[in-house]
Amino acid sequence: MAEDAAREASFRAITTLKARYFRCMDTKDWAGLEAVFTADLVADFRDATPVHQPEMLIHGARPYLATLAPMLQQVVTVHHGHMPEITIEDADHATGIWAMEDWLWPGPESDLPFRQLHGWGHYHEHYRREGGDWKIAQIRLTRLHVETQ
Amino acid sequence: MAEDAAREASFRAITTLKARYFRCMDTKDWAGLEAVFTADLVADFRDATPVHQPEMLIHGARPYLATLAPMLQQVVTVHHGHMPEITIEDADHATGIWAMEDWLWPGPESDLPFRQLHGWGHYHEHYRREGGDWKIAQIRLTRLHVETQ
Amino acid sequence: MAEDAAREASFRAITTLKARYFRCMDTKDWAGLEAVFTADLVADFRDATPVHQPEMLIHGARPYLATLAPMLQQVVTVHHGHMPEITIEDADHATGIWAMEDWLWPGPESDLPFRQLHGWGHYHEHYRREGGDWKIAQIRLTRLHVETQ
Image (cartoon, rainbow over the protein chains, first blue to last red):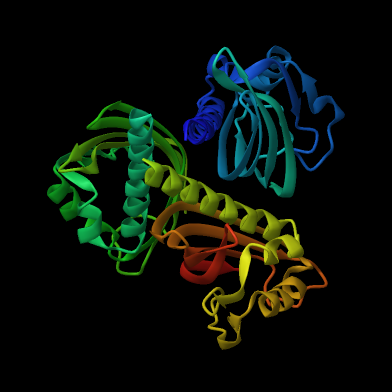
């Protein structure tokens, strides 16, 4: 029973962590977003856009934010996550798959090469508990479909 | 342990309450929708549309429904909620933030000044337990983006 | 308390089951999709498209997959589920309503009579536990709105 309750608490903590990920991303709370990741984050967004981008495999939460924040600062974004499949591996490790949908509307000062991006896919993630708090340690995005205008 | 179970039960009850909110809204079950709110509901939808509407701050579940039901009766609507961040404050009070997306397709007899609205944003909510049932006591919608045609 | 924990475990198992339903559908893992259903599945998708299709009431997981897999093999699909209302009826039976949204993009070799379908609605489901595993025993899709191009 104690184990069941601990597992439920981990599920809840990881889903709330991912909710913070989305809200911080879309409200451009970059410090809040960095705080959902472990310092040694591995972020793999090489296939996020229709063109494969080798440089979008990034090691470290700080380097990832240093790339992401300037890229999105002039872009209205919406990222939604759905239907998690979370596996608790042990007290401090878990994995998850999330369905997702996103929209990007670059503003006039953005360098992004489209007026709108609308995408669908899955996040494949690893979580690690540090000092009692679950964090995202690895994140990789695969796509089902992407439309750009 | 008992406390953990009670918290989990509250999380579950609040997410199911919000699910009823969406289903009653989109199936036009106005009595069912009124029942998800406390009688003293504060509903703030002043920024739901591209034009700020001061009159869309409404006190009371009954007045809110009296405004909403005729406005949406001739409109096909879809409202989806995602990724809650729920905080249980005490046995009878909680708050929550939900990501959301909505579509409105006014029918030919609707007075709404668009053919379609597609919006994204967040609900910011307060919940209160009354007679054992969680209800929505405050709801406020903020927008990331709205498109109308 | 033991009962509460068992109920939470059932909620979690059913939501994860439905997540597998969506992921297997959209990644075309047909064996994985068949495994989320009871063998005696009743699948009612007669109103999934703008034209009522009497033949889309199918009895049996195998016959359903035998219809679905060839229909979708040449189609990029996204199906997202939201905001479940799940009722645990007893240790081995439950029901659920899910809000949903889907997109279909038929490829050049598909027979489907549209270039794109975008739909919204609700799944109405019955679940049954067999050998310890929750499965979908009945699924029916109702629509709020469907757009085809």
